Length: 384
Image (cartoon, rainbow, N blue to C red; front, side):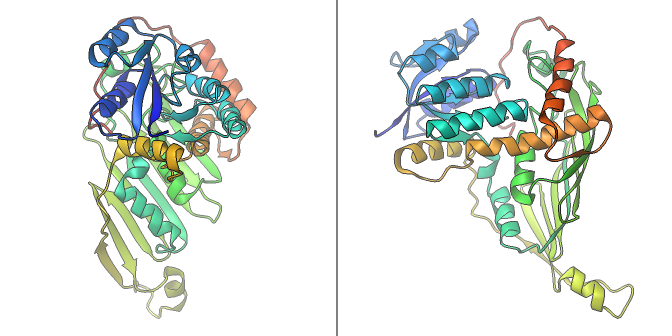
C-alpha cells in the first residue's frame, strides 16, 4: 500500500475542512476514497468539489460496508463516535476519531476494547498536541525541569460563540444531541492537554452554569477546582460567553513557573529548589533568585494535517501517532467528573462511578429540548 484510502464520515464544520486539506494536497500519503453525510445540502456540496472517483454516501455505515476504504475519519455528533468506530473496527478498518472520544467514559471504554480486539490503528484528532508550545511544555514537565508539580491554572475563555452558532444544528448544545456544552465541544483539547502535561487529578469540584450566556440547556460557563495525588492543586476556567477572552496556561513547580500565553512560552527558573530554599533561608521575607527565560521551540504547528499525516504514516510504515485513540478516555474522564460534580453539588473522586454518571446524563437526555430550524455549516479555519 502506497497510500491510505480514507473515508470521511461527516462533512460539517470539521469534516469539510478535512476534505479540503486532502484535496489541496496537504496529505501526500492519504487518498480520499469516500465521504458520507446525512444532510442533502452537504452531499450536494461534496458532489460539487470532489472528483468523480470519490464516492458519496448518506450513511456512515454504508461507507464502512462499501469496502472502498482502508481507514475512516469520524467527524459526526459525539454520541456516534464510538458507534461508528466499533463498526469500522469490526470491518477491519483503521480509525481516526474527532474529539471528543465520546460523551461518556463507559461507552468509550467499550470502543477502546473494540480497538484492542481489531489490532487496527486507532488515533484521536488531538491536533493541539502538534502545537510546539504544548509539546515543549510536555517535554519540560516530563524532563523534571519544573520539579514537583505544585499548582496548575488554565483560564481558557477565548471560545466566544454567538447564539446563531448554537442555533446552527438541531443536535448542538442539547443533552440528547451533543451530550454537553463547552466542556464537551470546545474544551476536549485543553482537557486532553492538561492531563497529558500534568496528569489526571484525583479529585474534582466543579460548578457548571447551564445556559448562563446563551439560550441553551447545556453548560456555557465552568469553574473547576482540581486536586492531584501529590497534593498539587489546580483551577480550570472556561466559557463561551466572554469577549475578549483569555487563554493562559500556568504551571508552577518546585523549580519554577511556566506560562503559555499569547503564542509564547515563558519560564521563570528558580536558582534553588523552592522547598529547600524555604527550609534553609535566614530571612523571613527573602525570595529565591529567579531567571526569566523566553523558551525556544521548533516553531512547528501542523494541527489537523499533522495528525492526519501521522495517522497515515503509522498505518504505512509505523511512524508515531500524535495521539493514540485509547488516550481519548482520559480527557473525557476529566470532563465527565466535572459534570458529575456539578450535578451532585459535591467533589468527585477519579475514577468515578460510571453507572451513576450515565444515569444522571440519561435523566437530562430524557428532558432534552427538540430543536428545529435549518442546519448551517461554518468554516472552522483559524478557530482552533
